[in-house]
Length: 193
Image (tube, rainbow, N blue to C red; front, side):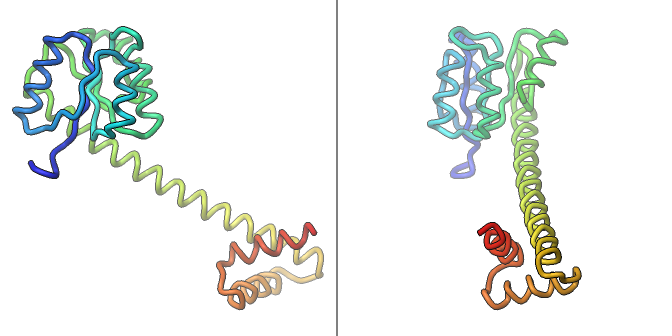
């Protein structure tokens, strides 16, 4: 896989399971960049190593995997696939609530790993792309609101109609070689002086 190798952080407190997991991942062509034996160490390693995905046991000492997963996901470090011996509905629901994008039940085999990892990574990229799109829409909405507010102020202060207020903002933007939103912000700033 070379430089495109998927980088995996493994968080599992049981040494034998962790070693099996690391071995299976290597056989599948994944690069294990770190191993943690509790949730707190998993968070610290995730911040430091910036893996492509984290495989996290649910029940671990010091800090449980669910709260560690939630922090890693909320910080937008990496997607998390939960690994657990418990497949009860509550455990699955708690994993989903933490933001985990995958779930593997012990005992697992090699064939269980790749699908869970690849789906989690794909969903993660979709999530990040969607957040980026939403951020762009929010920025455009703020710009639009700023322009509307500036137009309203120009209409009230200078007795202009809406097309004239907009034309004045557009001229200010063109003359200053700035965006319409920047012209609106300058207009609103000067209105408060």
